[in-house]
Amino acid sequence: MNRKAITLSINFLVIIILSLVIVSLSIYFFTTILTKAKSLASYTQEELDKKIESIQCEGLVCIPINYKKIHPGEFTIFGMKIFNDADSEATFNLNLPCSGVSAENMQSINCNKSISILTHKQVQIPARSEKRIAIGVEAKKNALPGMYIITINVSRNSKPYGVQQIRVEVES
Image (cartoon, rainbow, N blue to C red; front, side, top):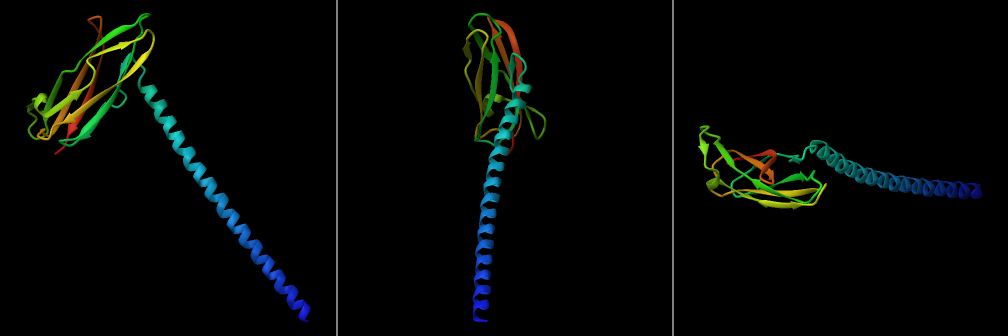
């Protein structure tokens, strides 16, 4: 009788130890799988974003994201791609006129008093290649709330090459 009780307790301890090992291994595998799945999902999202951006940027001059909201005193950046389709290196000139409309009374706003535009005015691009350019827009601290439209006229050899617009909404 004493021997059967010891055998039963040893069997019980073995089952408890095995079940703890199985539970801990399953927790380890589930956490490993979940972390791999999250990293795979984020990688896939980045890939999708790049593919969507390349689909949106099919022209010679393009800005994939052309609308942003900012507050007075803030700064934002837009990305622009210019593709040189010529067989030689070319110089591209950028002209950036701006217009603005007040959010309150739909009156015209002087852009020079409300926002600053920072970018290269001239860009050299090798033959059959593209260049990405950053366009920085800063809403001055005293900027009036409203919609600001910046038209980007790109020219090559003084001839129009492409036109894009970016819109910046300044919120109070």
